[in-house]
Each structure stands twice: as C-alpha cells, then as structure tokens.
Length: 153
Image 1 (cartoon, rainbow, N blue to C red):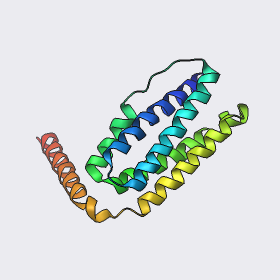
Image 2: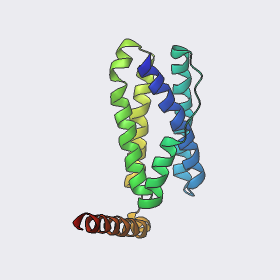
Image 3: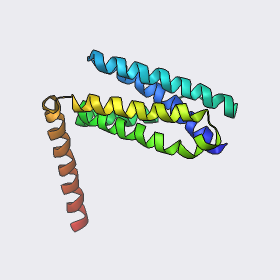
C-alpha cells in the first residue's frame, strides 16, 4: 500500500500544480491543457483513494518546483519538464497496473498528458524566454564563481 499512497499523493499534488499553472498563463491553449490535466489528476487521486482508503491533502512541493522552472527558464522549458514527468509517471504505473488493472487508465492518461505537453512545448516560442534563461544562467555562473573562490582560499 505504500507505493499506492505515494501515487495518491502525487496525483493530488499534480492537481494543485496544474490549477496554479492555469492561473499563471495567458495562453488559452495552455489553460485548457492544464485544466484538463488537473481534472484527470483529480480523477486518478479518487481512483487510488478507493484503493488506499486514505484521506490525503495536496502539498505545494511539486507546484513550487515547476513554478521555479517556469519563472527562471520560461514556459518552453517548464512544459518539457512537465512532459518528461508525466511520461515517467506512466512508466512508474506499469507494474502497479499489472496488479491493479484499474490503474491502466491512469497510466495511459499520464502518457496522454506527456504527449500534449510536449506538443505545447514544441509550439512555444523560446524568444520570449531568452531573457529569463540569460538572467538565470548569469546568476548560476556567478554563484559557481563565488563558490569556487571560497574553496580556493
């Protein structure tokens, strides 16, 4: 049951994350994709809750991580990270879905989300994100330089 609890928590956290992303974007195509993903993730959490019997609440950890990526590197990078995460989720559901066939639908939804988000990333112009990428790169390089200087002394 431990693995199912982790899956249930992840699905709840994803609902919170997708809802927040819906509020952040001005792009209607992303709003729709995020709303649909949030609804699916909520459904997944409910399915798993019937299996675990646990009442869990969403944590902001996942939301904070992807928001940091989006703020520092922009939408294109954030969408690729989300796509990869959803694909990884699909892979992680493989064995549990063999034991609990109801999880196969959840698994397939994870792959569906991955494909949709990857397509959205491909259609996102990186030019609007270049300033964020350059500033983040400069900050990281500066931090590495400072750390190297500290260790040289």
